[in-house]
Length: 622
Ligand SMILES: Cc1cc2nc3c(=O)[nH]c(=O)nc-3n(C[C@H](O)[C@H](O)[C@H](O)COP(=O)(O)OP(=O)(O)OC[C@H]3O[C@@H](n4cnc5c(N)ncnc54)[C@H](O)[C@@H]3O)c2cc1C
Image (cartoon, rainbow, N blue to C red; front, side, top):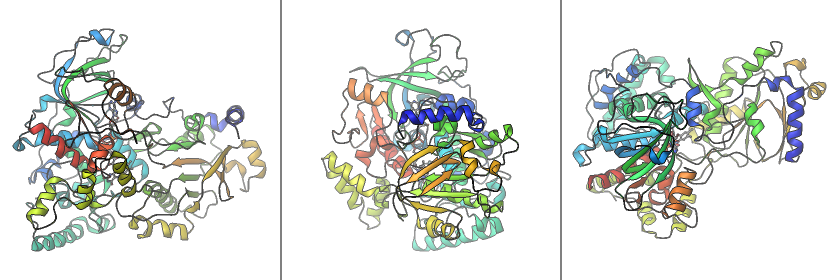
């Protein structure tokens, strides 16, 4: 079907199918999560109910036995930041100066901030008042929390050594929380001091782990342990509590300014980088919360910084060609990674906006019966399918013909424990420990990668070593894994490409609808698959990952590559940086932007740790 006839069908549908017109309208016009971050943040409530809750875990982070209540003052102003006097054009806005500025308050930005602030002994010695984190979202880690919640994952894929605090065993100490403490009901119990990694110590830790799971968490805990039995992977809620505790420990909320960086100028040989930031209306950049949003351009603020770190995340979520703007605006097609399509619910934290129930409010005779298609063959798609299947099982609706969950992947299931080999995750500190203990130090893979001066070759290594669309053995063959859900008919698996999506006219569909009462049916799309199948569906959830471009859009492509002439690989367009992730004497990069230097684990939590270590090294020598 051509795009013209498709939009015509859509128009007809909108005028004839009243159910569609009553779908939730989403607050965005384009498929771009970053650009909408401020707008969406305004419509979303806090992912963290209170600061007090994570203070309970502060003790666990520090190995202290008692919890500490930290009173944060959100209105504290950076002591060395000048007041901004906002006027209409950015050129005559008086800049706010800050020595260190991190753009992006996700996993990478938060960990790098913690390292810069918390590693005084190592020579960085950065004062909290000398650091600012600018992120478009209302809360630090908002993208991470909403995306992981959207997939329905219970455990992380990575193991307990990868987290946002500095000390390697920090997250492992969460094992000592009781069930009550996990729910924020009690004080943190005594935590044992970190054991030395001897063979005896390992055995003792293993025994402690089982004892802790058994005695402290009881029956519920044996179902949902804090760490998985395979590879000690943390439960998502525990990992997030630990993240919150890190934020609290370093008072990073106080350093966060909600704004979107729209322009970066390295300013030639000047002693600073200049950034233009569109602040959320409540934040004028100084933390005093007195932004004058009524004036034109009033929420535009200029920062100058001696050093900036770009921790911008990934490219935008990737959409197939058959998805159009109307599908997204109507809520028929949603991307699990596109934060814009989801809002928080007060009871369960982040989750789906329940567009179906809003439809039902207006059509009380139409019961919610869902035929959901999940598109993707990776771990996020499988997590989501299993979550829906389990929810369906627990409501006892599996026998209903309209409770259908389809998983469509263009490739067969590929099992792999981690995104990439663990050799890529070893940081310099761990390599030194390995050498000291008689091991090999920096793994061969990493050495060969950094010895290659050909960035095309580096990109090829990354592509070979980081295979997208894989699932862990536990998710596939574990107790409640995908394989069994397919065997039991709870999930229908299709290995195929989607060739076409057709919007169905409701009245026409009801004439041929196989359901006893066609009014029970919400079916409004038909998918044609490359294996010849046709599936009628109510909603489509995409778990198709991110695009392949470098993140950042205009500030990277135009400001830093085209205008400032910073070096990128001709082959893939990603930054060419030095060993300390320095792209320019004042500009560091992390995450995807640091991939050509850090290798295949750059985007992961392990990559955040690798990046922080290297940036800290540079900071320590300045
Ligand atoms: C569902 C899911 C599960 C994952 N599970 C694991 C796992 O188990 N283990 C693991 O190691 N990794 C995992 N990852 C991969 C990785 O750890 C995450 O993608 C991580 O969130 C990346 O962090 P980040 O800081 O680079 O990006 P993000 O979390 O996306 O943060 C970037 C931030 O920068 C902000 N930003 C961007 N541009 C601007 C701008 N111009 N101005 C202001 N702010 C800006 C964004 O708003 C955003 O808040 C997972 C990823 C996903 C999606």
